[in-house]
Length: 301
Image 1 (spheres, rainbow, N blue to C red):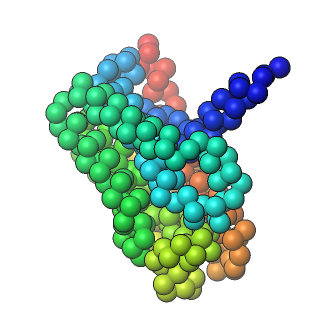
Image 2: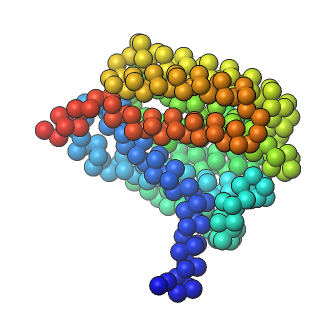
């Protein structure tokens, strides 16, 4: 049996894990490695990619910065989240705001130290990334559409770091990136509809707050149709192996998403729409394996 002190420590660890969204960070790490193996460096020996210390440092630095980003975002959104996500906020508040800020600075410092192993350019890149996340959390997230756009850019930045490292400029990679960016942008705009009550109370100038839910739905619909373009290109014009089945499924789910969006009225409806997008993104990470199911085996042999 755990004593009171150990229970409190366990609760604080769970609270910190909730604040930094550890499950999201694990998915980002996995996605970076899978993208490196299957998309960015398909001709490299598997061992060279997996045990590449510089790549490992980029992935670790990305994870540290993303974790610190979730902390600073949680810090600024504490009052809003208390309205929109009361249950999660109770868990998050077990860790004090002071401790969150200390952890934020420690994680950023460690990220820069890890990046310094790669190069000075990596240090500069991650320093800009840290500043961008802070600027978004402090100011930009309250600006209609600009906040959504910047949030989507920041979300794909870890993949951009790996992309720059491998200097692979094939068109198919840009099409993948556009698909992911648009999907995340739609998710950010759905989150605004989902959290409109807290945003309105805390004076966040999001699209639903300023222009209403109808305008927000119109913008999302346009973005969904734009997302269908890279999806269809990846099915028809590029060789993505069996991952084409994933994109066919995406087209079907996005069309279903549009139908549900038209009927959505309550927060519960928007939460379901958000979950559909999260499902598409998570399945997309694992579907990278379908690009070439024999790739890992062949590279090991």
